[in-house]
Image 1: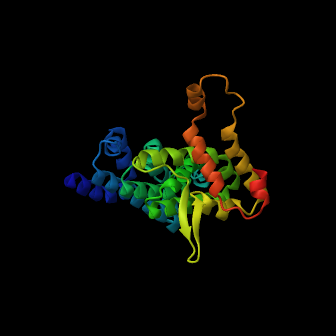
Image 2 (image 1 turned 90 degrees about the horizontal axis):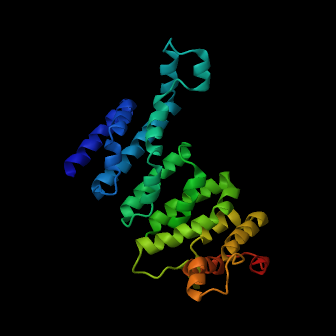
Image 3 (image 1 turned 90 degrees about the vertical axis):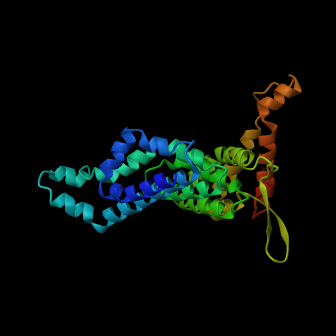
Length: 285
């Protein structure tokens, strides 16, 4: 494992200078093997750090003007391609390879090893900033990490990304809150199987203490100040309790299975512990 980690670390510089080598390894299945769930933790960590360093180097290359200088010096590139940006194929190779493993990256956000989770979210931050991931697919997993009550650093990094996305796409947070609640519920059941699933965390301001929803911070930062966003979020969460299509005359066991009562209990905690700033908020619910 140590040898593999050292080799991958050494290859990072080669990938930065020759992105097509990374593509060749992707086609050979090497990247998929490294990212496999069967890989050792040290190798996975090194891989995530490697991809992060490559993305940062590529971003610096583009921003510094090196990519444009290289393009201008190539007489074989037509003016139309220079304008469209199609000439800089290296700029899309790294992102293209990594986006092929986006499902694996999403799965790693719910890994039981906190170092893997943190490194994965850190990588996701660069992929999102460079427009290489679909925020609509990514946001529920970031919401899910708000349920990481055991590791505040992972939770804080995911919160930062949620706030950034909320500033750019406020409607998307409201639209994806239901998927986010389900993700947080699944996260806690998987990562902390010996703990009771909870949507509240104990907070103290020095004088008094109380529970606040795991989504309280993102609610205050991106949603609470806009009435439309607040009420849309409340409505979407309340829709999880919709039982209009469930036959309540059937056996209780079947009804409970259809309704997923533990998830609904978790959702009710989310609503109960949200930091409401007006009396109209709980009255609306």
